[in-house]
Image (cartoon, rainbow, N blue to C red):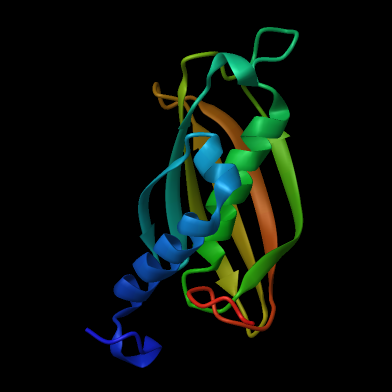
Length: 150
């Protein structure tokens, strides 16, 4: 198989982009995130809430929930080998996550234009309880996801 974007299927390209990004993503790695699946415009990541993530009310700190949602957003909007960043987002915390919870962030592309996109990310716990709703808007910048520009 060649590295040419035109010779990869959309699924192969999405997987190659996720692999390249994750290899450089120390933030997601250090928090124990795992990529469960990617597809064009989609990503599913997991993270287990550990004691470092618990705030003063005994629940997972919202910043960690935001980070998980943001990572799923990033992996979903970068599946086309077009470097893409977040331009804005909104998060709704609807249920607390607790220490030991296995969280799953599922990102789905709603719309993708020439340079912008809209993505919905839902975080659930191991019981299927919705923890977070997150909507991100993306903006395509210059460059390849798989090859960092010099």
